[in-house]
Image 1: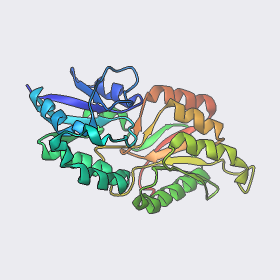
Image 2: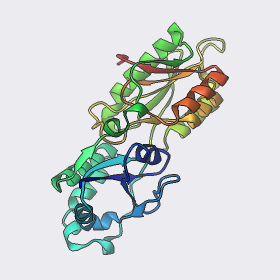
Image 3: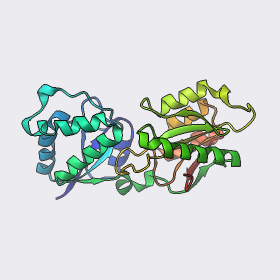
Image 4: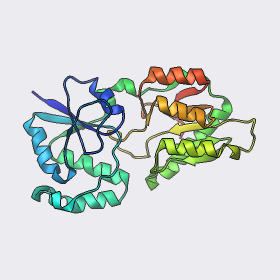
Length: 269
């Protein structure tokens, strides 16, 4: 019988995906185990034997779920077959996150494993267009549109998947430290808004232009709502149908309590 494997990373996404599957196999690189979900570790330096083991277990499909930073590689740990992939892997890792992820997908597929998207496995985690709570003002909508255009331009540079815009000005842009660091920066520089009584600003998240949507989709959760509140923002918007929401009911509850809007926006860029 065909089985599916979760290649898990840190955070709550892998458990949410696992809850939608019937007895999946779960694997993770050392140091990147998911929250509250048992995972068997595998070494990137022994990637080809790992792929062989997936086939031996009857796995035909895999889904990537969770956060993984570029691991440190041990040159002494490579098996002979994986060693042949080293130039390819290193070139991809040095070329940025997008190239590394595309190479990972290619290697799995070249070994007869189908890579599924989270949207295929757990479509309810990815809201289509609409407002979940609150109501963005015209100024908020303009700020969200400005943030979407910024990400459309910076995406090819392989930066982050988020921006904070207030009153038309970009207060923060997501880079390697991630969304929480970006929102902390925006909170510490909230006084840069030209009009203290004007629009408070919007966090906007979207995949990079041309990104393979089977892996590394932007993810929002209840903690993101808390961080947006701390940054003094009016709300959170994201590209409809392309961003994962973890624990949507709790996100909505916290947003309502704080007076934030949550908006799956379409056609902003």
